[in-house]
Length: 176
Image (tube, rainbow, N blue to C red; front, side):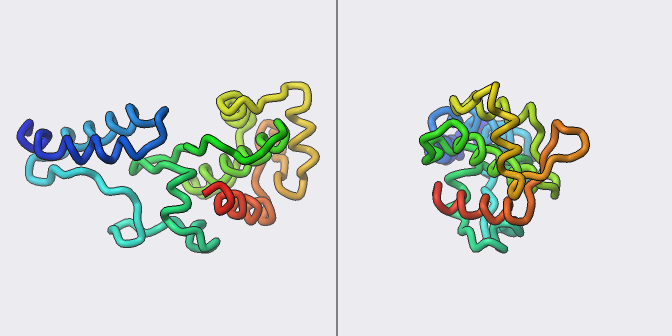
């Protein structure tokens, strides 16, 4: 097994180095774990989701003509789940950043679960991570964009509307 690790460690490092700085260590760990977890007869470096691979490009990206090299600048797919990796949201206002993060989070959840839902706690955490949390105005910012975000009966969950999904696709293209 260690022979195979030795053979592929350079590839793993190369792939991890292509990730944004704050995700490089995690990417390296995930790839190394996948390499060592596989049976010796099938050991190999996992391949990302691509149009040419066995897995097909997610329908949302196909439907919105978003190319792989574009969405991979925004989302990282580790074979199981998506992570939002974009650093520069190209927004100057806190409210603009919050809305864009809400759109991206909705698409992340759409890709993972089939539903473009946004949990309030998850969005708050993401906003804090991007220095875009304004506690007193957080709910107001979401309410002001009813055309993009539909509040569910729980009041702690929103769902992207069709225009919201279209706006998210535009944001992904713009950010890439």
